[in-house]
Length: 482
Image (cartoon, rainbow, N blue to C red; front, top):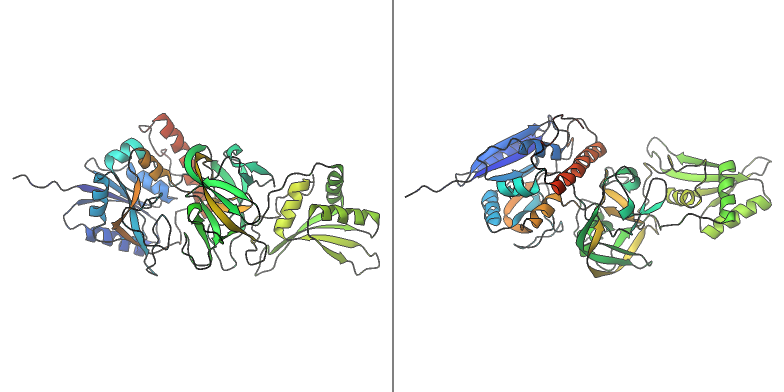
């Protein structure tokens, strides 16, 4: 009687110096789970600048006998049965989407929507901690970067760093956008960040149209996340009441963070005159202190009382721009009209486009006033929109502003490629892990945004390789630095 063939599973884990305790817990859990039902091949990648970079280097070192390949992180703890459940799913033609719980709180963190326990076989849309057959990896998924994007309809206006609203489908790699922090890194909350477009294209997806009570309509893929005040609802994210919620999971009454309403550049003679006045008599300022850097932004224009001042006020009133009036204490009686707040200042510059007063320096690093009234758009309805093209927009920060709403990229590269090969990502409950959320020093030698830009630049190259079928090209490049 022939002996049973024991499958060989290669596990790739990136780690860096300083995270030895996390790595040790991770390694012990995987080794402890291998009781003879499979043979473990452990591949550690040390001190790569990004997780995706470590995964890719590890995949280049896969042993010849590896039948399955699994990508993990050093803050993951494998639970017994994970490999057996994953192998069973792959043998059924399913990409196993993991059952993950937070190691600190015990709360579920599984897709398609964090905070909810999902039954076996639920379509996840996105598979964290991928587990693939060697054939699926070699022929269909490799090279695998950690970013792909199914986003909004191509006509959706996106705010650029030049304060213009450009259709999502017309953006190209290298364009600079206004974005926000993906997660709030401190108690003060998220801030505006400059982002670079790393990739864009068109892809057909099942879509929904999100309609808000203030009249906006945005069509996007159902898995596209928005930043939402969830008020106790489970969501994709951590901690506070602002969380990333996919469009298909939105409900009437949910409030999407909405710092802007899209505008058009002003073209009238009067607005040209006003732009000239701001260039000649205006100034821009940012207020700060040792505890609140860049707490406020303003544009100010000064003028003596008289017809010119009243003309400026009338022009601002006609634009709907809010401002305060301040008078000097000196005998000159110079009056200052001050456009207070970063979003109002950004709108004014975007509509007038004065030559001297440029938007650079006005908004980057400024706080988003999510605790103030008027900063949200309330969802009125979510309607199916059928299968249609969306812009596969990826940015260096993972976020952007779409139709005035705070939007996130949808990471989906591995599952998209696997799905095309007939392996849809479905929740596999036995494919289970704990996540200990070790967020410090995720990569070696790069700050956060640089790591994102790096992996997403590699993604752009990976898309081209996928389209050309160039899996035999050495990947990643020989050098280890971007």
